[in-house]
Image (cartoon, rainbow, N blue to C red):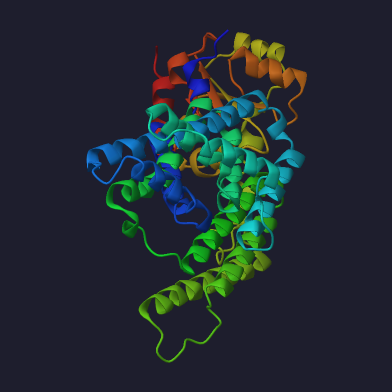
Length: 433
């Protein structure tokens, strides 16, 4: 049976738009890494093969077809990652799996810092290159095939960020979002290539040391994703110290501790300024972690009192562990029931606890409900049965029932909602249907 639409696409339009925009920006940055430049002579050869009299419109069309072939390859990878994420969503609940993914991101990040290179085996690269060279550049189909093959033979500068992107998409379990994200990333990579195809090679900035800076920026982002992955399954002090270390090391790479030469240029001063900011932020996080703070956004404010009051779910929710237990609660309910699906590894669940359930206005409304929570961290057979009962792949998910035990399906909440939006849902759930 096909799951409800809300479980297939559990993300808001704003979130999906932000993801797609971010992936387009990442693709644009990837276009300016050293190993993407081999695509330029391939595309230039296609354009030159049509003679000097080729129009800009024709050049644009051929360039767009080349980029389309490249985008289709990445889209297929994104869809596969999204589908695998959905099918393996239960496995991703395991801290060992999340930790392994984080290690992969660290390995990928170190390759971006130049400690080693990640690339396809030489023999496989040669075979792909030979296939690409035998394709005819004159036909639209041949141009698309060359673009697809070029996407496969891009070197180590793309291998690490692409692998990181696929792991992130596998986490979402959304095939449509995965395909769209990789498609837009490929369009970002291809945008400068289209400019090259239309305006000539002079349109591209000259290679230089700045390319290494782009690679290191990707390395920092990959390390940040690794920290984000392990945050739900490790003690709060670990992410605090990890973020502190990442900022301090970034500050060193930005020459925050190195003296500026007497006649330093504007860009040198600009990046050193950001390095000093990263240095101060990292020091604040490190000091805050040692002082007991567990909030990376407020490292110097001691949050112990707030943290002690944060676990709303443990003190106010009645735990339910099976479908039978839930049915019994619904039969005897004398007021509306709110069922919250929770897991220790679920970041959005913890955000709901800290920022939404703890809000005074929301707390007043929650007093009108019988609060029930299903903790599916263990992913036992009973947990799976509870999720299957409502067509959910996993948390976060909040289900509302009226006093008679009938679900208010139109009021389902999938994913994080801020206090204001969630308050409106609660008002609707408290009203007579």
